[in-house]
Amino acid sequence: MGYIAPEICKGAEVTEKIDMWSLGICVYEMAVAYKPHVLDKQFSKTGVVPFRERDWKGLDLLKDLILKMLVLNPEE
Image 1 (cartoon, one colour):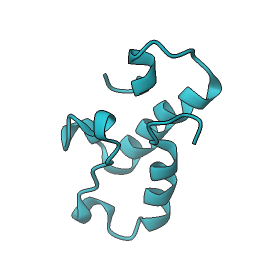
Image 2 (cartoon, rainbow, N blue to C red):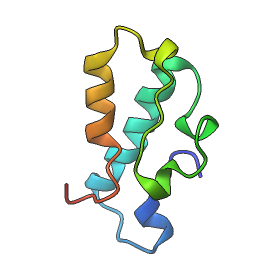
Image 3 (cartoon, one colour):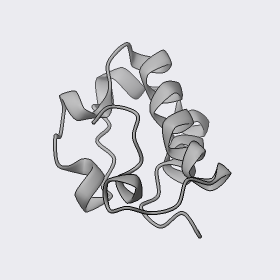
């Protein structure tokens, strides 16, 4: 799992849009030193990105960026 976009697991074609997912995971991990899978192993299926409030205090702009990167539909 980790950095692989959910659509790759479903057999989608690899494009630069899919790279946004991996970059979003990297940015998330750089900000809080753990991957979102640590808090919610199902987030890549539900599309709900887990943010533990105490770790993200004052990082609203970064959270917004990550939410735009970790979107299940690569066309969005």
